[in-house]
Structure formats: C-alpha cells, structure tokens
Image 1 (spheres, rainbow, N blue to C red):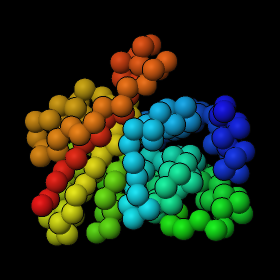
Image 2: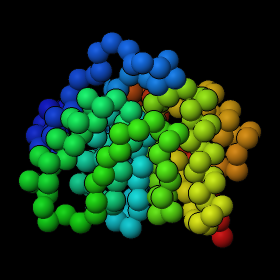
Image 3: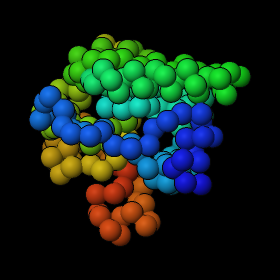
Image 4: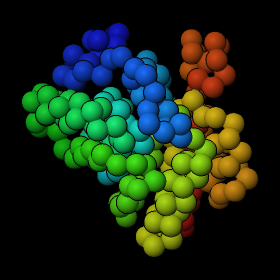
Length: 203
C-alpha cells in the first residue's frame, strides 16, 4: 500500500514535507515517517492498548494515527509549528469519523518539546530526528525526572538516530538498547534508516 492509500485508509492528509526552515535551528523540518517503515517496525515491536505514546515533533500526526489504528494505545503529539499543529487537529477530526468505535485517546499539544509536561502515564516516546541534541537532552531529562516521581518502565522509539543521540543515551543515561529494527530497502541505502528501541527498567 502506498503513502496516499494509507492516508485514505486512515482518512487523514499527511503527505509532503515542510517547506522552508523553522524559526529555530534546533528544530528540524517536518517530514513524516514513511508508512513502509512503520509497517516494518510494528512487525517486530508491540504496543499495547494500555500504553501511552508521546510523539515529539509529530507534525501532521501520521505516526499518532497509525499507532492508534494498530494498537488502540493512547497517543499524544507534540508540535511547535502552529500551522502544522492545526493540520494535525484537522486530521484528528477526519480520523474519528472513520474510527469512532476505537478506544484510546488522541491529543495534540502546540508547544516546544522541552516545555511539554510529562504525564505520569506517559511510557513510550517516539522521535524521528525532530531536534538538536541539546533539545533531546532536555526532553530525556524531563522524562527521567518524571520517572523519579512515578516509577515505571520507559521505552524510547527512535527513527533515524543521530550519533549524538546515541552517544548521549549510551554514556550519560541508564537507558539500554533493547532492540534494533533494520529496514530492508531503506537501510541498505542509508545505515541511519533504522529504529532503535531503548528501555529503562524500574523493578
């Protein structure tokens, strides 16, 4: 199924990348995760309906809707660009017209990633190269502070992970690599085209 067919299935519009550059060099342009990559990820990685997923730099919400459609998990999207955020909320209205019987919630927040207040229920966090290492470190520290207050297992789902992200997670946090999902057809062109799942266990 191609990109447009998936959008039609979910009754949303997420094709195309952001034109031009944002106001901050710390935040990267919107580009949706390819549906083909999401398909390969969720053949090997399971989300439960009880999970609460936060997508940082969610754009128009493609990953949010795909995850909800697949798992009925509660999903949240954090987007700093107000115009793109509005498109995400419009997509949510269209999506619900087709998915009224599905459980779980879909919420979008228009704010900077580092200003999003981590909810005690949030336990899965999705990143597709959304911002600089400085912002990433701030967001991870917010997650860790939340876990200190409300102990729970946390997993990070990172697509197109930069070397800086890797170095920080491996050397300055207690997160451990749980799984690597290689993407045939993507990864042979670019080694960064893969998903890395990092886990933090609190037993």
